[in-house]
Image (cartoon, rainbow, N blue to C red; front, side, top):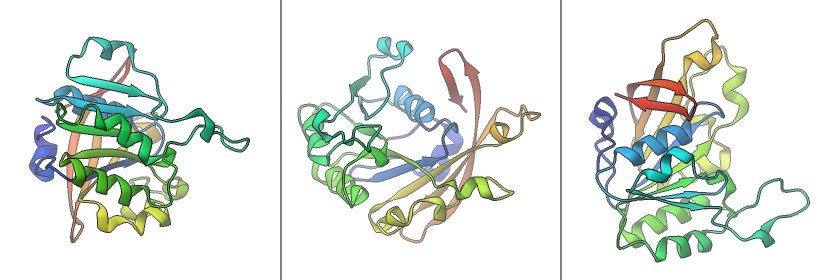
Length: 218
């Protein structure tokens, strides 16, 4: 399966059955927007499991996206937790009723999964159903502490880094315009790491901001 972003597909070599692909970025970079645009571009049916956001209005007319909101139980909330966490078993239940009809699963996002090894468990799910899974992930604040705000692989949490053996590809999203208000390039940079040796490539996408949020295109 391809993303239909030509430059990205050249370095990504598609989303293959059983693969786990992680899309990482700091808040505000447009991870969800890019994931949604990948879903809209897909030739097949996409199951989008949102652990946080409600379905954007403009997606309600997109026939190839099955939107599963808040795929978690309310009893997982605690006094310290501002957002509910979701168990992998609940995500599996969401997937079970749709797995024969879908071509790609998107999980938004990893940090809302209640597990000590969420990446390992998502990879096991991808292998069990033999479908690619694109999972979104936040990055640490270390990105903001550098002069160059481009994310790197070590900007994932230490816990996540310890599970990278289960990851097939990593995409890191960066928009220079976010940090430089004088810049209006409308160009996003995607760094692609491919296992097993974390071979690194880059792709560039154009984007525009609309009333619906960011939209990415080749």
